[in-house]
Length: 73
Figure 1 (cartoon, rainbow, N blue to C red):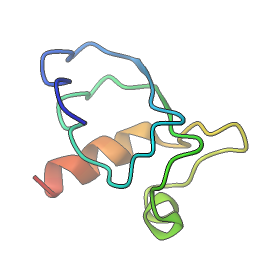
Figure 2 (figure 1 turned 60 degrees about the vertical axis):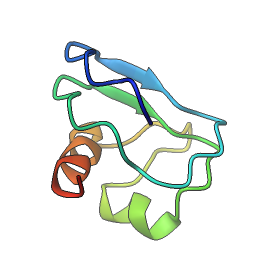
Figure 3 (figure 1 turned 180 degrees about the horizontal axis):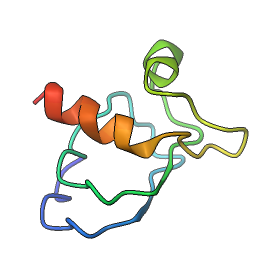
Figure 4 (figure 1 turned 90 degrees about the vertical axis):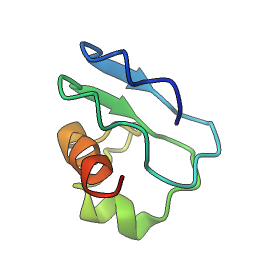
């Protein structure tokens, strides 16, 4: 996901239904509280490792997704 770098105060991000296959580009979103990822192509294994998503498609721990992006730059 490109272009999110300047949005350092972003708290909610809805990426649902975008055919996303990889988690990347979230490293600057340290204030993220809600991350919606429903109906994408992200491998279940990765979602599970990052705390999973609830039945509505919201990440259980959005900061884990941000930290994953920091480690995998």
